[in-house]
Image (tube, rainbow, N blue to C red; front, side, top):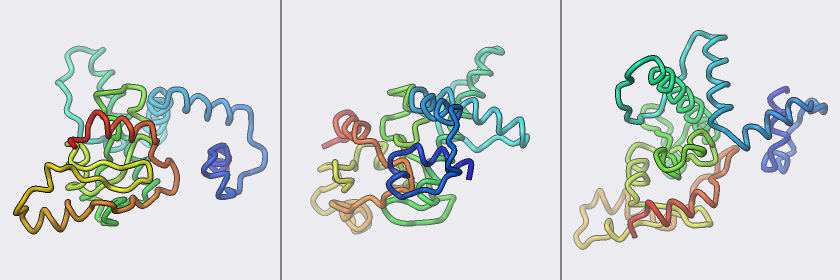
Length: 205
């Protein structure tokens, strides 16, 4: 019920008439506002608290790092991995551990894609509305700009995939995605601003 207090502060969840304790505290509101302003900072603090309480680190995303050199760089890497773990858990939970395009529900095949790439915007790294759960193939296609989403959350396929005599597998798994709607998440719907960035800066039309 305490978690529902936070959900009740989310406009999307309010529309779903989330049942909260009915007494959202000032602290709850301040934490919610802080997360909206700086999700990476709050995510790092939340994951640090999780590790303190459980002794377990959440699994991070598959993001390449340079090996850390010295205590400061090690601490920075630990923070980055914790932010990744928070982001991954938030997005996977929102999409109920299923691919938002194929509905595949095999955990080992589901990745979490950043809409605005990890390297492009530090402030959006931990923002769940900047993420989508996709199977490994669709995640790579999205990351490489071979597919994107329009404002109605329907797939746009790059002309680079629509080649003559495309192999049957390519036609059935990628080209056939054209116009397919994204299955909406339980919370943290994809941010239209992030999607516009992906179409403009990542998508290979």
